[in-house]
Image (tube, rainbow over all chains, first blue to last red; front, side):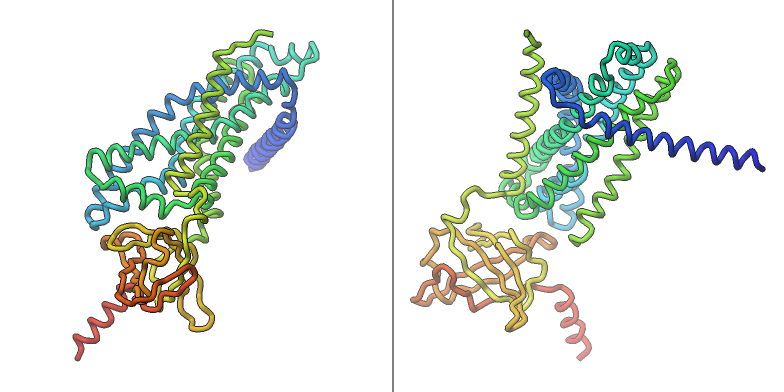
Length: 260
Length: 153
């Protein structure tokens, strides 16, 4: 009996201390950017984390927009409301799908790579040797990656939304024959820039911070063996996806819960 | 110090794409106008029931879009809804005084909008005038209730 209680207590303490370490880690590393060298490190990470993720975001945004239009059309046409297609595609993309799906793709594409990269640096003791020669690995390695993720996910989300709406236009208007004027005007009547677009941006900022934070922390905190790296990479994708989906519900309830 | 300029170019294009995308979302998708106030004029109309009318809904005439609803408030004097709309300034002074405004629905479940129909009076509507002849939104529940009570007779 005491054995189980001890195990429970140990698990709780481990989780709590891990959360505490993650919080300290975030606070320590997020405030150390402003130097010229740091800017170039950040730029390099922007390239790796942001620019290299554009292709996957473009393709998946296009297909999600297209499938939304196709599904939405077959449902709406049953009510004779196929003119509301633009509204449906734009609202679901801007409010929900663009921030969430872009964040999930980002966790899989960039987050796992960040974890593996930092994990390997730790396993080969590069981080320790940096400390030995007086370079702070938080400043040199972690902060540029954190900021790059924080900045690039909102941009990826915008690209996702634009391409998705365009994909919906391709299927809805060009293929299924919804009138182009009502596609755009219904969209403009219903989408509010501040309530919908900017709230979507706030969501993706939060997701960007959380996903990169989890990825970088998992890499920094792993057990430095090959098995540890593989576990940490898996954990990054799982935790980041769960955090995105859970936070999305909370944020949606806060933002749109009282809009009716 | 020589830096990898291809990398910087890539990041620059990436940032630019994000900004342009946000502009597209603002202008094309949510219909934020630039410099709207200069070329519109304002009319108000009181409706007994606006149904599901919302700000930014379109105002049409013969089905052609001529403006949009900017504000909806409860009139504390008569307890009906006071709807403010902005119309394209080319119609300023062209609509007759007895123009009627009706709240219509596009399709069966589509969004609600205001349809204007011109009358024949000699006086014209100008900026800030009120449309008196209005027709409230069709509320499905009222219609069904009416139908049921007629059946019972």
